[in-house]
Image (tube, rainbow, N blue to C red; front, side, top):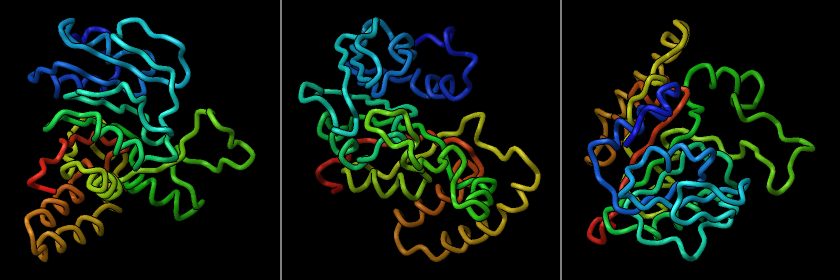
Length: 239
């Protein structure tokens, strides 16, 4: 993978560094945006792309202009890596899309989702004061099919729930440069949530419950303005 074209974007660089010691045969980039992921993959890797706002994109084996609110095209299959970077928050039917990701993957395939996080302290304050999370304003008189809108806000507990419902393993959250508080008051205001999480970890009755609260209580989940969630397609034995 090549990092040269995206070193200016810390989250993209962190993702490619995470993927760099792994090899993939077939990758789906949905949505594709400006095609940065296709450019970064090794030439031996087959990369397909999907985007609603582009008719075609160079560097992809197959490319579909398609609305992800309708899931994936029927020809999408056999992927050992699916990346949904800055896309899930724009989808009104996220569970449908995640289930389509699941059915289009090989056994043990990897799913990557990156999205804004609405769990950090400043976001909680804004929601308390205004009733809306940062980056998720009121869409009054702005709702039109096909419009680029932030629809569904995400936090780690929501990602965990939807990933599990779609048939994936509990997601892990990967650290990145944005995985820290920007302001001192956020660290202070984050302490009640941290103490609550520590209590939940101690009270957990199963390993999965304990791991959930450990991840939910991590600085990446509590303080970051951005989430990078990694999961794999659950085996039949673990369902």
